[in-house]
Image (cartoon, rainbow, N blue to C red; front, side, top):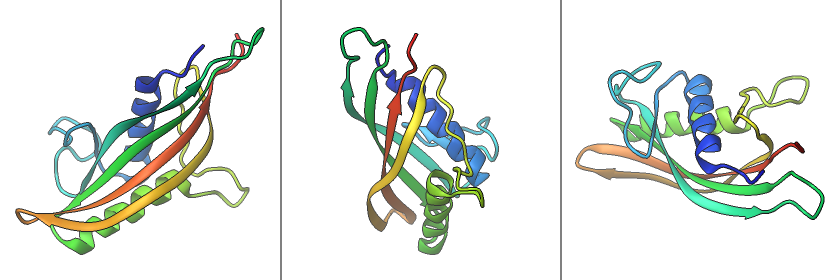
Length: 145
């Protein structure tokens, strides 16, 4: 089965909300009903930027993908935006004492086999709203059927 980008994106969005304790929008700011904190600043917005996929080799049902995301952390001050970025980074890369990832990313029918921060652009401000932009890469595979 090929990697399904939307499934992976939604799982990452949910993991970010769980790992940071703040809402994360998918392609747009979160709405008031989003859990856990609605559209109250600070929050994050996840933008899927595409990726590369490789189909399964002959006789194998598994597919692999390298998925790229922009994570924008939004705050009312530069410090708050950077704090939110720190929480997002910890949610993606943080580990437990036993060496596993602290925040699971569990896309249905897929397994995340690698995580990395590709680039961070730091803080910017527009109209009194501060943001910190980071790019995240997830390496994903699908199990054999």
